[in-house]
Structures are given as structure tokens and as C-alpha cells.
Image (cartoon, rainbow, N blue to C red):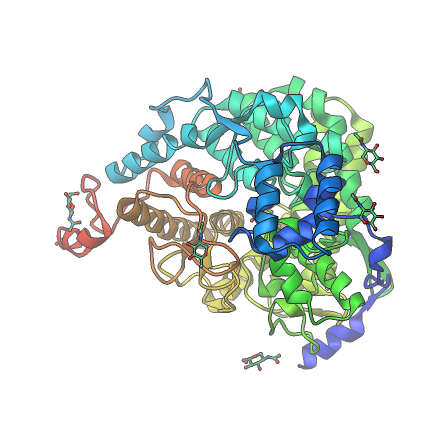
Length: 585
Ligand SMILES: *[C@@H]1O[C@H](CO)[C@@H](O)[C@H](O)[C@H]1NC(C)=O
Ligand SMILES: *[C@@H]1O[C@H](CO)[C@@H](O)[C@H](O)[C@H]1NC(C)=O
Ligand SMILES: *[C@@H]1O[C@H](CO)[C@@H](O)[C@H](O)[C@H]1NC(C)=O
Ligand SMILES: *[C@@H]1O[C@H](CO)[C@@H](O)[C@H](O)[C@H]1NC(C)=O
Ligand SMILES: *[C@@H]1O[C@H](CO)[C@@H](O)[C@H](O)[C@H]1NC(C)=O
Ligand SMILES: *[C@@H]1O[C@H](CO)[C@@H](O)[C@H](O)[C@H]1NC(C)=O
Ligand SMILES: CC(=O)N[C@H]1CO[C@H](CO)[C@@H](O)[C@@H]1O
């Protein structure tokens, strides 16, 4: 507690980041009323015609939007403003349909026998890698011509190139998911597909001024962790495609401006101020794709509180961590509570700022490659400024760890979250600082208990019932933690990184043998089992899980084993596990 009080004194918030917005001043969630803000949307979603609120907003219109809205008004007039559930259903059946907006697509560079699998020593894992590689075509899609020709009728935003969907209910391109998908595709030797997918995101960026959460109009006002430049950097590593950098550098810079202009706040410490980012999706109303859930949660709030709640909930969705105790800020500054305590705007997230520092550095590096020394210097300085700010505001010297910072209560949120170590992952820390603190960071991690689970690294240690909390293990987060630990650079860290990756790969492998599926999330306590919680059922596929596992197989394929038998020739399955481990004797 002493340290908390000291923190309070040290850190003074400069900008009143908690400024209130009234609903009337805010933009709607998007500029298509049928999908974002209309009586029609409200009535249909509140009548729960579909179990998943996303179903309705993914339907296409059979008539023009104006006619649809006009005819719905007629229905309201004809029913004394109170249409029955059946009348609503009839209306939706006549005015909407779900013939599908995407078609299956075979990526031309898909190879069912990619070279990299032969670098994996363990036979069972090599087979596993082949199986994952073979999932790519099952998740590959293209936007149908009819959507491209008549985009007004759809909530889907058309994009030119084929792409990989995450899977399940997520049948569009998603922003940060795509980073791990791109990694996986490049490992699988699919450079052209990876390039097309990045070009899709850049189309969205040029169209909206930022990359929305996913390629749907109702995601318009929300972005996601800014991983685009990291995708380009990875693609460049595999290709040396300087022309691609040249063609897209202006767009990448535009994305930096979006975050600087729309998402930054200034925090002051000991007389010097630091600019940092937070998630802040400013628009009115519930999330269209989770309309019923948001509306119900906010029903008892005052009007102002409700407006703020909708902003905070969308901002949490923008973080990718929807939802988590990371965004719960109670009156006492703790993360205790429920979704009703969500105050995303108070939280300066470690991962967002680490990713942004990495992005600025990438843009500097790309400009250097393109022989634009002045721009390279400008972005290089900004990147340095961001790294300094991370160290000044987010690093906790006493504990040897980075923590999210609460600008309302002026304190570090000292909880285990997998995102804490992301500055190491993004090389957003001065190497001398890493060196000086290597042992402390490792000890903090080990003592947290977060690495002790047989199913992988959970996002948090709090069993809140939200899907980005314990016991859920999210594949991108395991990738972040493993790379962060590896980047500490000591032999001890290397061993721990390997072991952390191995635990997760084994868990996914067991799950695959058992269920013939890759899941979007796993269960830390039960290796191979899928995670639960949150607002929807677990989804299969799954883009980023496949990417993260392929990443580990590529990185550690020489040493990874499917079980403890030490016999690289055996194939293990969960039920066979105890049998095979006897073989070591
Ligand atoms: C919707 O949910 C209800 C109640 O949970 C269930 O009985 C029904 O089968 C579900 N319908 C669909 C289409 O999933
Ligand atoms: C639809 O209605 C809006 C608002 O009344 C109007 O501004 C717009 O021009 C109409 N669009 C079409 C295509 O008729
Ligand atoms: C519905 O009723 C209102 C009030 O009587 C009227 O102004 C409006 O034009 C009507 N709308 C339609 C589409 O008939
Ligand atoms: C890219 O260029 C660098 C430096 O010239 C070279 O070392 C590397 O092997 C090249 N990579 C590819 C994939 O061509
Ligand atoms: C949060 O809740 C837990 C369990 O209900 C309690 O033990 C803990 O003291 C609370 N923390 C704070 C800071 O209030
Ligand atoms: C054990 O493994 C063998 C060989 O992989 C497999 O054929 C068999 O079905 C497995 N047994 C159980 C109980 O899963
Ligand atoms: C609220 C919302 O729908 N946000 C979506 C943004 O994209 C992620 C996938 O990365 C989804 O999980 C979220 O549901």
C-alpha cells in the first residue's frame, strides 16, 4: 500500500482523459443505419429473433436501405408502434436474406507438402504441422462479385483479394488476428496469399482512415491492436519486397497518424509529460453485433453512464480483449467487479503501447530501406519517445515488471496479465534495461504462477467468467509471452521460452487428436480442451491458433516433442499418454 500511495504522488494526470461525451454529440457506430443505429435494428435485436446478435447484422438487404427503413416505419405505424415478434420475423424474412457474401477460394500458392515440416524432428508433431497446413484452404475465402457490384446492400465491406477467415462465427477478415495468420502463411510458403491479405487491410485503411476491427460496417468506429506494420515487416523478412514497401509506406504512416490523433493521452510524471495510447472507440449506442447484450447490461444506468458504458465496451472490443478484468476499474481502483464496472478509458495498456512503439520503429526502418533518411529519423525519434514513455509510466521498478496504468486513480494495475511482458516482444525496451533487469523480470514471471499451467499461459489468474480471463489460454498471447521471454536473451530465459512453447504445442496437439479441431482459445487447466466463458460459444478453425502453433514448430522444431517419452518415433494421444511415457524406462 505504501508503494501505491507513492505512485499516486509521483504520477499526475495532465489531460483530463475522462471528459464526458453526451450521446447527441457522438457519431453512430457506422453510417449505415440499418446495421448500426435505427429503430429497425433496435426492435429486431431486442426481440431476440436470433440467438447470436451477430446473425442479424450479417444479413444482406433485399431492397435499398431507404426503402427498408421506410417500410419498417409503415409497419410501426400499422401496428401502433408495437409489432409482435412474429411480425418482426416476417418483416426480416421479406427484407433480408443470408445467401452468403463469401465464396470458397483455393489460394494458388497453397502447398500440401511444405518444406518447413521436415525441419520438425518429432514425427507426431510433423504430422500435426501438416494437418494444420492443410486447414488453410478450408478457411480461405473471397468476396462474391455480387457484393462488389452492389455494396450498399451488405454490412460486409468488400475487399479485393482472397483471405483467410479466423473461422466459426468470424467469417470476415479481422485485424489483429491477421498478424498470426500471416506468420503461419509465410511459414507455409504462401507469400502471395500473405501479400494479398495485407493489401486487403491497406484497402480498408485507405477507405476508413484506420483499419476497423473487421471488414464489417458495424465495426467502422473501432480499430484493433495496430499490427499492420508488424505484418509488413514479417512479409518483408520473407521476401525483401522493397516495391511493396514503396507502394504502401504512405498508408502505413497514415495509420500512425490515426492512433496519434485519435487515441493518445498525455500523462505527466515528475514534471515531464509523456504521450501514450489507450483504446477509445467514440460512438453512440450498443455494439450492433452484440446489441441485446449491451443494451441489457446498461438498462439500469443513467443516460450519461449508459453513453459512457457503450464507449467503454466498444473500446474494450477495440483492444481485442473482449472482455477481461483488465478493463474493470472499481471505485477503489482494483479490477474486481463485472462488465458493469468497465472503464476502458482509464487504462493505459502495456500491449497497445508496446505494439505502437514497434510500429513506429517499423515505419522508421521501412523509410530507411526506401532511402528517406529524414522520415526515418523522424519516426525513429518518435519510436524512442514511445519507448521512454513506456519505461517512465508503465514500468514498475519495485516489482520488475510493466503494468497497465490507471490514469484516474494514478496507479499501476499490479496483476498478472499475459500482456505485461509485451514490451520485450516488440523490442520496445532499451537492451541495457533488459540486461540489467533480466533476472528480476524472469523471477516476477515465475513467481506470478502464470507459467505453471499444463494447458498453456492463461491471460490472467482471475476466474471472472469473461473470456479473456482465467482459465482461458489465447494462442496469440502465448506467442507474445514466448517471444518476450526469448528476447530477454539469457540462457535461462531461452529454456523457459522453449518449455512454455512446448506445453502449449502439446496441449493443442492433444486437442487436435481428440477433437480433430483447432480452437480459438484453450483451457489452462485441461490440456487440449477448449476455453469457455464470454458471450458466444467456442469457435473452430482457427486462424491465429494455427499461426501460433506453426510459429512454435518453426522456431523450436528441432527440440519439440509431443510427449515425455523422448522417443521421437512414437505417436502419442492423450489417452495413450501414460502408456507411451513408460517407454522411456
Ligand atoms: C437458441 O437458443 C435456444 C435456447 O438456448 C435453443 O433451444 C435453440 O436451439 C437455439 N437455436 C439455435 C438456432 O441455435
Ligand atoms: C436515403 O435517405 C436519405 C435521408 O432521407 C437521403 O439523404 C438519401 O439521399 C437517400 N438515398 C437514396 C439512395 O435514395
Ligand atoms: C408514420 O406516422 C407518422 C405520424 O403519423 C407520419 O409522420 C409518417 O409519415 C408515417 N410514416 C410512414 C412511412 O407512413
Ligand atoms: C534479403 O536480403 C538480405 C540482405 O541482402 C539477405 O541477407 C536475405 O537473405 C534476403 N532474404 C530473402 C528472403 O531473400
Ligand atoms: C477483490 O475481491 C476479492 C475477493 O472478493 C477480495 O479478496 C479482495 O480483497 C478484493 N480486492 C480489493 C482491492 O478490493
Ligand atoms: C493409442 O494410440 C494408437 C496409435 O496411435 C491408436 O491407434 C489408438 O486408438 C490409441 N488408443 C486410444 C485409447 O486412444
Ligand atoms: C465486439 C466485437 O465484436 N469485436 C470483435 C473484434 O474482433 C475480435 C476478433 O479479433 C472479436 O473477438 C471481437 O468480437
